[in-house]
Image 1: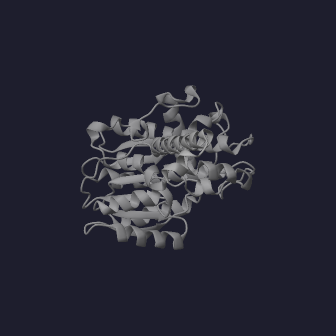
Image 2: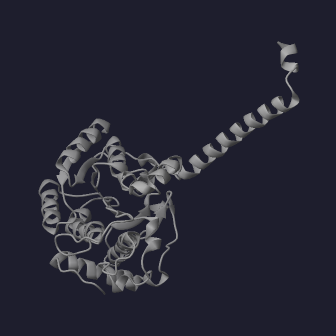
Image 3: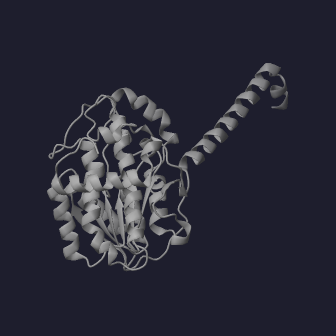
Amino acid sequence: MAAAASSLPAWATSTGAVAAGAVVLGAAALYGARQWAAGGKNIHHPALTGKVALITGANTGIGLETAQELARLGARVIVAGRSADKVKAAVAKVQASASSGGGAEELIVDLSDRASVERAAAKVAETHSKLDLLVNNAGIMFTVGRDRTEGPDGFEEQFQTNVIGHVLLTEKLLPLLEKAGGSPRVINVASLAHESASPKMFEDLQSKDWKLPMTAYGNSKLGNMLHARALNARLVKKGSRVRAYSLHPGVVNTELVRNSPAFLTVFVWIGQLLLKSPWEGAQTSLHLCLAPDSELTPGAYYADCKEASYGGPAGLWTDERAETFLAATEAMARTGIPQDRI
């Protein structure tokens, strides 16, 4: 065998070595890229027995992963979603993950329907005396090629579902959060897409100047962040123990990505290894749910389990503009009357 090997020409052995080396280097690079894409991981796992958490959009993706982990730690998790069948299936999964002290229950809510939000909040108030964690996780995203659509009250649909619905739900549930011990929290799942928000967002809240769906989506995600920032400032001012945060979960392989138009499918397929799994995408949500107060900055925006810098239109980041935004969206949520500018 040794003689046969030595009879191979030099180019064959050298090419083989180069190829093998390329494979090793490629695998190492791919592994490194995958680890980088995975991002930060939550390291806090306190017992949550006796705690109650409500998570919107908990029937799938990062919402479901968040719900399962909180239940595993002993929390009673209210799985909120629009589809009764999907919510029921998710409750079974969360219940299966729960420790002896944890559990799950369903809550049907359509965030694009004010009456549905009010009914859902009333049901929670009837069945629970407090709420420790509110994770405003649900969201919709329109991709390239989508036309502008309005929800039942005349709001741009992404704005109504992602912002108005959560503002109303938070307002209705705030009394229950105030009754919780420890450090009750409101956590808004936003996105790095807030950087695509329009500098004129406050002049076109309903995105009537529809050019790119991603701009309208970015407006809604910036809205989630402004909501958390202004709400937290109010809570601090009145001496409440409730705190509010917002976060970017990362680019996650969820239904939002999988429902991209056909011509983007190839790019999504190529990028699979660089997309976070739903479990990885849930890590920053879990960090904000579980980290001690001493490790968090109230009102701040987080990414990869660390405080991050705000992006997007800088002029919208003042405390005054955030409060103006929250006051206006609360008024819209209460009345159901859209405003185009504030």
